[in-house]
Length: 450
Image (cartoon, rainbow, N blue to C red; front, side, top):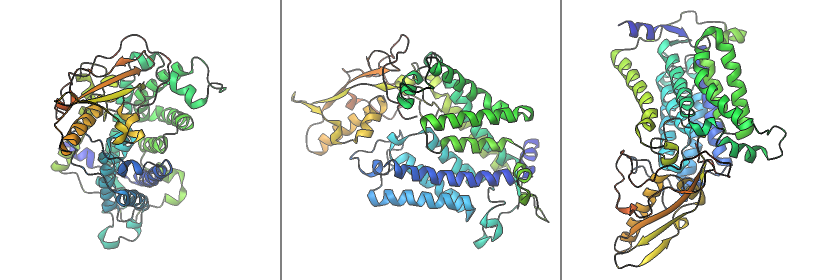
C-alpha cells in the first residue's frame, strides 16, 4: 500500500530525540510547578472528587499516594528525557498522567490533557533513537531498533497533534465575544494592573484577533518550507507573550518545542556540529503494518471528532459547557456569580446545603459555572442523605452567572430537581437555561480554568 510505504520511509531521528528531551524536562517542570502552587492536596483533601462522565469509577488517592504519584511522574519524566528504559518510562508516565487527569475533574487544563496524549504518542514513536542512554548502553534489551533514524509517521503524528490543538483553538475563537475583545478585556487589567504602561484601550481587541489569527495560521505557515521561519518567529513571540502575561506553567515552552518538529528532521545536526556524525551502519526503522496504520487512522478520527462535539449542541458551549472539554477551547469565557443549593425532603423539611462541607474552595470556584459539575454535586448530596438514613431529598439550585461581563443570568432551571436527573447521557441537558444575549461587558470575572 502506497500510504504504508510513504509513512514508513526512514527520516533523520535528531529532531525527535531533541523533542523527547524537551518533553521529559518540561513535564517534570510542570509537575514540580504543581507542588509550588499546592495543587497536590486537591486530589486527597476533598470529601467529594468530581469526575468525568463514564470515569466515575476512578478512585482518588490518599495523601501519601498523591505525593508519591507526583514524585513518580517527575522521575519518569526525567527518565524519558534521558532516554532510559524509554518505552516503559513513557507508558508508565502516560498511565500516571492519565490517572492524575481523571482523578479530579476540577483540575482539568487543556495542556494536562495534551501531555497525556503526547506521553502516549511518545511511547509509540522511537524517541530514544539517539541522544539517549538506551542508545548508548541498551540495558535489558532497551536499545532502539534503528539508531539515529525515525519513520516518517512518527514525525507527522506529532505534527498532526499540534495542528489539531491550534486549528480547533482558532476555530473556537471565531465567535462574537472573542472577536469583540472579551474576556481579555477583563483579564488583561487584572493580570497587568490597571496602570500598566502596556495596557491601552485597544490591547484586548488586538490580542483577541491576533490570537485567533495565530492559531489558524501557524500550522500552515510551519508546514511550508518558505514560510516556516515566519511561523516559528510568530510562535516564539506569541508564546513568550503568553508566558509573560498569563504564566501557564510549561505550556508555552512545550508548544515551542512542538513547533521545532516542523523543521527538517536533521536540523539539530546542522545547529550542533557534535551531532553530525551518523551511525556507521544505520538500520531503517520497521515498516508500519496494517494494524499500525489502522491505529493511526483511528487515533486521527478520534482527535478530529472530539473537538467537533460543541458544534452539535444547541447553545453556546462556553455557557452550557456541553462539549467544552477535550475540544481545545482556551480562555473563551469568564463566569462569576453566587450559587446556592436547597435540599427539600418528602416531609417538607428544607435544608440550605453548604457546598464547602464537601468541596474545597477551589472546587467550588470551578463548579459554579459548570452545569455538569453542579449536577454531579446534587447527586452526591442526595446520595449522602440516603447513606445517613434519611429519605432522598430533592435538590434545587439557584445559580446566577455573569457571562463574559454580561448582567447575571440564571444558569440552571431552579425549579428542576437535579438529584432526579440522569447523568449518564451525552444529550443536551433540558435544565440548562439559554445563554444570555446581548454584547459582552467589562465586569470582573474568573478564568474558568481552560
